[in-house]
Image (cartoon, rainbow, N blue to C red; front, side, top):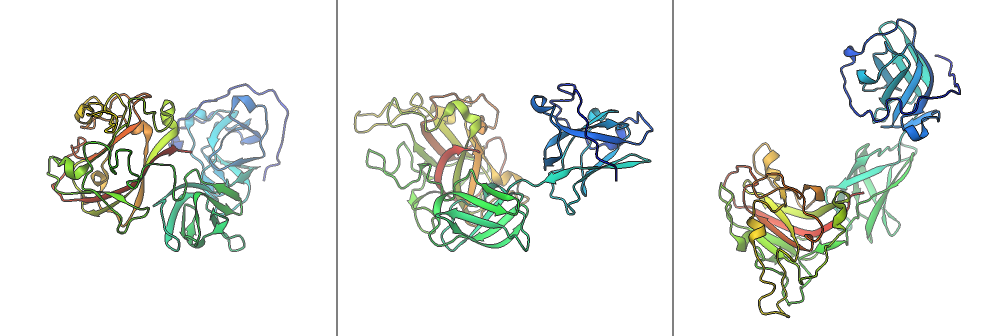
Length: 420
């Protein structure tokens, strides 16, 4: 093993900073030296802290390895995990590389550099981040039922088993787990809110909310005009049997091969109530938000897109109490080829060409994906002032050819929340 040397030196600011390209073709690395590689130190790639020396780094971190005779290095391992080398960032005196985002099977706390003839080891601790909860198969699960949680760094050891805590300080019973998945029984009395997962490396709290209460459309709340819908259409109605949070929207009926549907079966409107109705979220920062909803597809769906259209009072506003005709709402935006919306077409990527779910699931759509017309062509995103009303309908192809079907689709808990 090589001795670890630390030198104080003036670093060239910004060396390779901003490098993001990756290429796994190690054979293209030019051999510029026949000397034995020597590592002097490791530093961050961030130009603002590039004069700091590192003795440890987290999985996924990008670092700069500084030394001599590094041009011939054709493989680097962090413990037992091989890193991806980009030949554009390998020189005689520096290598830019990311620590593999894989938990090592053997924790040796070594960087291992190899050439065709030589090798050298450098002491460097590889740290595993705290658990990172990224999603749940369904964010609404009843007490005593099984929830499925996805993420990263779910490390469980015999001496330090993984734990998952719900709001109210209640720990769920972990049934199975691996580094990316936890199967947990929801404890009695679990409350809505973020989850916390704890491993031997620390605790991580989710951005997502279990049984999220930040709902903009729940199909339970009555609008001021006395009805449970607020627009021209209410799809096939609502139901609560086998629901997960009160009433849910039902879409059911015939869908033709060319994605033709009936509005009274497959369209729901919840338009702005007044001319000055504000957006339902901070629409000046679309990239920070996602739309979520729960869906249960009971009968095969194999044609048409689920189209989700936000609108503002300029497109449609409804107030049956204060005016005789609402706001003269127009449906032009719904059928327009120039008005953006999101398209959800899960049957497109299935092997069978049709789609059902095994119970309720949570769907997440970035707000930056509300950029397509009804045929799937990309448009500019709408700006603020167009996010106070909502139309959800199954119909039009989204640019994808399907096969005739008679789907039954249930939808609930529509919300727009911060992604992280």
